[in-house]
Length: 175
Image (cartoon, rainbow, N blue to C red; front, side):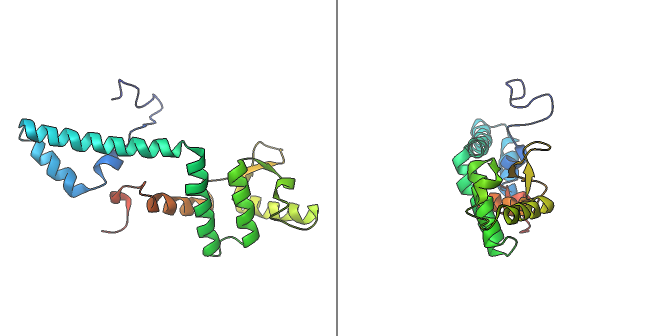
């Protein structure tokens, strides 16, 4: 798989063996033990198990490349979770959703979320910057984007990824 370009020299892997083999450890050990027999049917079961796991993982990767899915299926629900847990005020959550949907905003783009004078809006934006939830697009610029990690959004995003089934069971705290 590496020879076919599924990882680069920097160590990034498009395929995540933990996502495949860590989803159901009991099934993994069962299929692995079964394959040790080297019987054709056993090897087919092993191969099917691995290939289905890879297909599932690659399907998740494709979803993460879809802007609409990331925005509406991941970012917005994470922001709403932050609002529900009082991590964000209603105004902050509204502003963060605007940023999530537009990707890059200027202060004026947030006028519907942060009502009042431009000075008040600047103060509200500064608070989000200080908390590390948003960041300038470039040093010295007054255009902003969400800061996904490390930030207050990070644990919310991880919870959403888990809710959507993107995290293998082995990474959960259930056992």
